Image 1 (spheres, one colour):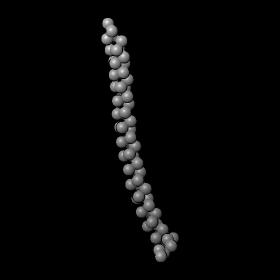
Image 2 (cartoon, helix red, strand yellow):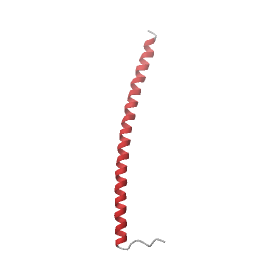
Image 3 (cartoon, rainbow, N blue to C red):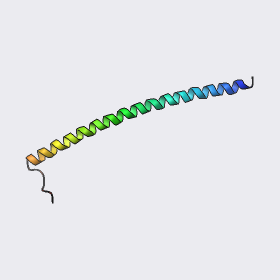
Image 4 (cartoon, rainbow, N blue to C red):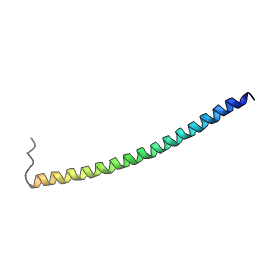
Length: 66
């Protein structure tokens, strides 16, 4: 009988730890998704920058580099 309270505490701790592990796994998935989205946005920004550079050169809006 003396083992029952300890067993109950351990079961509760196990259940909480399982929830923490599940939450952490979900956070990792979301983090990966955010990283992928940021990478896509960076590629788009690079393309916009390239297009803007071409437009500036075409209309002679760029000051000569020294």
